[in-house]
Amino acid sequence: MVAAINPLLGYVVLVIELVLVVAIVVTAMYGSDQISERAFRLIRLLFNRREPPTRRASIRPPR
Image 1 (cartoon, rainbow, N blue to C red):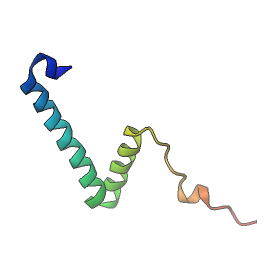
Image 2: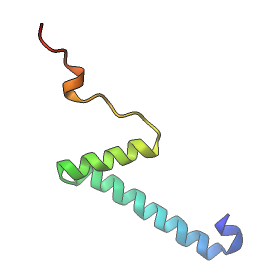
Image 3: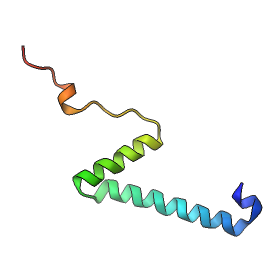
């Protein structure tokens, strides 16, 4: 839609989107544990995926 108005503006928007995606992926892979977890949560949100169960919720309590 933006490219129909001005092709240069369409390229600028495309480059900005690509930079954001690369920044999120690099942060998820090489960031600290807390920042990496947040980046993975953002990726799951973007792909409309459910959060995996937490470690405590997946382990049955002893009887």
